[in-house]
Length: 160
Image: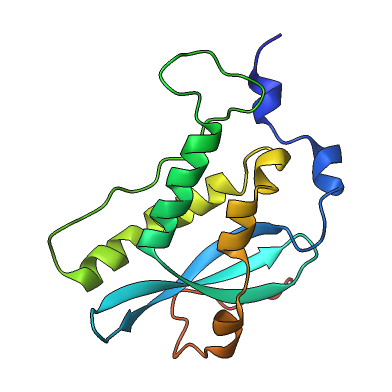
């Protein structure tokens, strides 16, 4: 038996997921935050299995922390033996230490969208991980904040 079927999502497992499980996330925009330090954060639209949509705001460092936590739990490590609780995680775009912060954030958007798409396509048991659920969870501050514009979200196209 190859290990391929384990990597593919089992539809029956997926059907049993609760409706609040995130199934897709797309970066809608970036926003500059000024203060003691200034940084950019990504405005993301999350869609759940139940069909609801909401916005969350995350910094690159939060992506990095999530990825590090998942690597500790699920990466096979140095050995090529993959156990029942390991899986191949998507690649997170690396840290960038110098350069224009806005350009860095803009350039990360396609890479982070690909990362989230692959992350949310992992086996069901990984999706249930608390770290993933908390990352995509809409916090109170997320829900209270109104974005200025969502220039990257395409308006839903009407089916003819």
